[in-house]
Image (cartoon, rainbow, N blue to C red; front, side):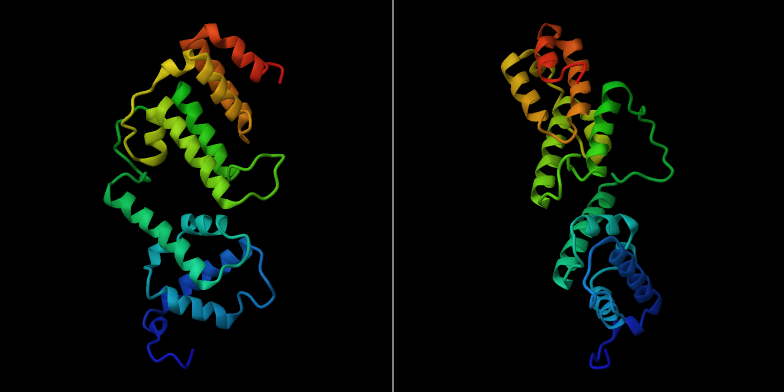
Length: 228
């Protein structure tokens, strides 16, 4: 560190210490080699990161995002990339005034019924990183694909849940006719049956088909048996 003539961390020691504490938490959450997370490396990482990110970028939400994307302690370039992704998303959400607030005067009715089920379905997926109980580690691209597929389905069937999750307008109106199409329904159910959250989706499908297309309930019973 003495070889660096422009040492930003000495100009904002509190900021630097906050970054170092954040990095130590990350070191607990991921696997690492013996040489990782030493004092010199921590100091150098902090010195580089303090040049690109404000203190607010090193939040618990960012910690969760980075740790989720790294099985092992990340090299600096990877760490910076993940932090940048999260910080940009945070800024975009704040700029659009769509991030949830601790206190809010929002008069929107809380989610209930099927909308609440869709929200819980997504939340369970996020907590499990879209990995099934019978699966080991999966590639991050697979998790991302499953997440985007779930969001697309939620956007179509529950705009309110989609907007609650993403803070973005759903635009599309729910197309409940899809439950009445036996070919499309069977295809969707078969795909959902391979999902790590198949049981939750089965409950949602049973409720929706019972409401919009009871004549197709036999297809739901076939793929998602009540006793299964």
